[in-house]
Amino acid sequence: MKSKQAHILLVVDNPQDVDTTKRAFQAQGIENPIHVAHTGKVALEMLQGKGRPALNPTPQIILLDLDLPEMGGIEFLKALRQDPHLKACSVFVMTRQNTQKDILEAYNLNVAGYIIKPINFDSFLEIVATLNSFWNLIELPN
Image (cartoon, rainbow, N blue to C red; front, side, top):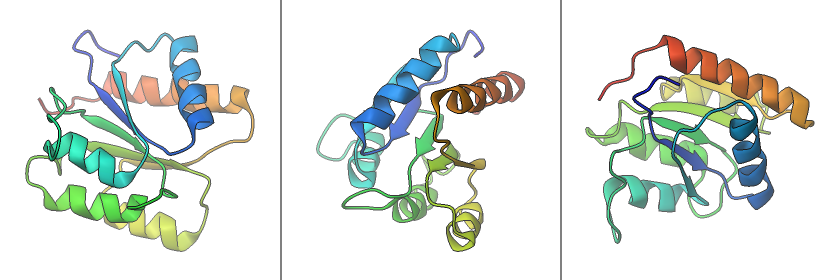
C-alpha cells in the first residue's frame, strides 16, 4: 500500500483465519497495521470507543466475515453505516457464505467487495494481492 498506510480491521472469529490472513499479508509485503476483532460487537466497540479507547486512527479498511457470534456481519454493517464517523470505511466481505441473499444484502449496505474465501492458501494469496493492487490505486478518505 501507499506510504500513508491505512489501518485495517479484520473482523473474523476463527483464529486460523486470522493467522492465514496475516501470513498472506506478510507474503504479499503488506505491512499495514492490522487490528483484530472476533465479533461484530467487539469491532463496533473498537471503532466507536465504547468500553475501551477507540482505535486511532480509525481503520479505513475493514475485512469482514459474515458468520460471527453475538453480532453477525450484516448486523455490524448496518450499525457501521448508521454511524456518521464510520460510514465511509471501506468494507470488504470475506466469507464462506455464498447465498445471493447475503451478497445482495451486503452490497445494499455499500460494501466495496464481496469475496468468497477460497479453500487453499495459494488462491487466498491471489485475492490478497488483488486487494493490495486495488488499495494502491484508490484514494481513501483521511
